[in-house]
Length: 183
Image (cartoon, rainbow, N blue to C red):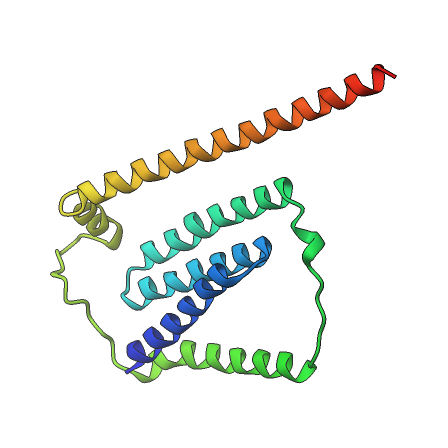
């Protein structure tokens, strides 16, 4: 019962965060919601007792989004559109109390339920990380390699786009300096 409730809570929160990413006009809000969505996705791994994958999800993907966040703040003036207005303090207090109660329920629920075992066959004397390695490099080798290639292509494309933008800025600075000297 605990897993079902946690699944639906994480599913709703993940869908909510990713809908903010798609609907937001501000890049900072979108990147913050993207990081939150990735953290909520890690909750699915923790529910499935794949603790290693949950931690990797948080550190790798959320860390990458925070790097994207930093680049977004450096390259774009995204703070000019941000104006925070607290219309109702009741909403903030209600959401804070509801999230605190939800966290307490999530963390206390395993103490009141029985231990759930995974349906995947367990090999004796092989830990979680070793099982991930066995499954990842045998059954899922091709998708793993394709994901690595896609990430490499995305990284190279980001570097090329950033360098083109930097070249354009240097040319604009040189044109400005030439215009000042020409007076």
